[in-house]
Image 1 (spheres, rainbow, N blue to C red):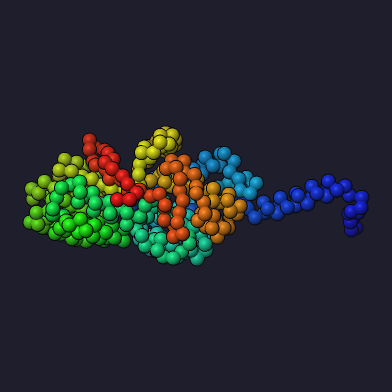
Image 2 (cartoon, rainbow, N blue to C red):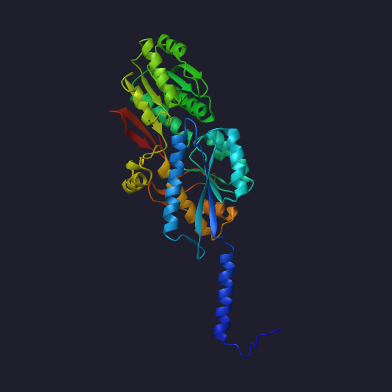
Length: 386
């Protein structure tokens, strides 16, 4: 039987309540019960510790947000982390990127390696999925996609930092520039060499290798013959250590090594004392350098039983800013979230704030220079200008 409502006899306040409830349900209907966040990092291989650290940062933030009753447009939702292993390989990265897209993630925290981020960016962009990467190659945000966002300063600033510090603080006249052949390494070394030349310094050896080479006896002889005083390098830590051992063999240890963030690791302490000084530059500033870094470090160690290996605080902060963008968008639609990301000045619990320009570059990124002393890295200076 059709039971229609007699509007003349239905109380006005109940009618209003019914309309309001319908509107509320309609609003909540746009937001699913679970919102998936993809994390694409190297979780196996030589860079696994760095990738796991970035995943840990996301997991820690998501656990806190869920515990606090995270809500979107008035609806409490659960955030779910979907991790994948890109193996620091572009081809694998493209495969797992498509897997994340197919799984229904609304955003991706990834990737670590610039070459992987660049290759996967079109896959995420095709579905309007924001991609927040710690990769530093400038090309990543020059692809023309509105979905690319960088957590830290890019290689343009880091290259200037390497060249400027090497030229003004290390007091040498003959330099070598070495790279690992990756988009990150080659681009950074090229930029550093250009900065050295701009500072009227001579780059007498310029070499490229792949990211696995460890046989450096011939290179060590060449560096000695060229009387190189400072080696600017974007080799990985295990490669840099192999190079230092080769320099020791040919008795050319009165040199200083200045690297990128791939040597700013605990393993690099194995090379301490072989040469006169080891320095590293990094756009990934350490959590302890920030006033609010201590509480994060305490929570991180309590949860994972070890300190951060790299940039877990940046992925942690990125997750908080992403969660705020989802709330601002009042939607789980990736396109709406991407739009909100471009307009947000997000609160980042550790570093303070994250905000991006129209290309997705971090507005307040800085680069620090560190010296290896006593088995640990000590900050020498940092700047967002160089």
